[in-house]
Image (cartoon, rainbow, N blue to C red; front, side, top):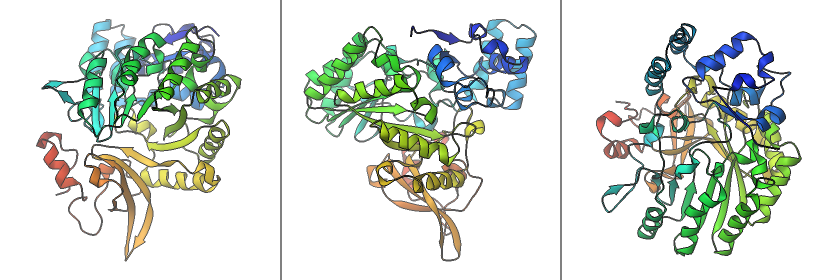
Length: 442
């Protein structure tokens, strides 16, 4: 299949879109001026069931919906579009709205940026002790954009909201200097939107430097779900797989962090062949997704997804909670409901699928997992723990919140047992300036 991309300026050329009701097309146009829109012919022709549109989960996953903007935001942009306002007027209004949508949650822009020799490395993040995130500049787009994506600021043309780096040599130097770092995660956007020759410019220096403390190279990607031909028939697919093999030959573990949001993405010969080719290089594929209202908030979808992933040789890894950014109001599932969904799905699969962890929030203090609802003494509580923390000592420590069936993020929760703060909050506050503190329970 030859690759064909669709964006806001040409989405009406998609034959299936031309048959949609006018109000659905208008919503794509309005919301797409604020939240990024991009899809491709594989998604359109193979993943979306157009007989189910507008309720098809992959359609909702890739095409903007009216409710993804708050009503007053939608009305503002709709008025400009209807009145044929200039592109600059629409862009200015869109940018104002974007800044209200928490474009960089969890302190990404302020607190995770590493330094070397006094210079900030804005194309990198170092939040957890062992892992550095790297944003290659040519990988700051995707084969198609997920409507829930917490990295949506990468794609909207506001340069001050973007991460991107061409500094491969700084990456090598930084990891050499920081002996605690064992993992590098290439992320974006999607690193596998790049041609192999560009990806090599980042990965080969790492493996040729033979850094003793570097053990794992990770690649976060949606390519298996949105463009499996990247690994089979693209003109540099074989070169890409050879690069993966060279990582393994260099004694490094290649962890392929694959994003699948619905079991539909795992169906068909193209994705099965792509997965097998990746596995044949010695890479390990781990899978993850947030739980998303309107798309996969059904335990049967998750159980089916985990079973298919294991059957194809992948390892279920994470169920996340939709991040507090962008269209969170549209996608969020209350934490208690997310845990119930996780538990039901988890109970319906065999132990080989139970490598998955969740539901987990990638939040300012770290990755916070909802372990469940408990009765302790006379109080009903939500039990949580840190999987990762800004302070590594926070990991694996359970803590408790008052039961709240409406809470959708950890900042909606109050500590149980008359505590003023969660155990990490005092130390977290010291890491931040007062204006950047995410929550204060006093």
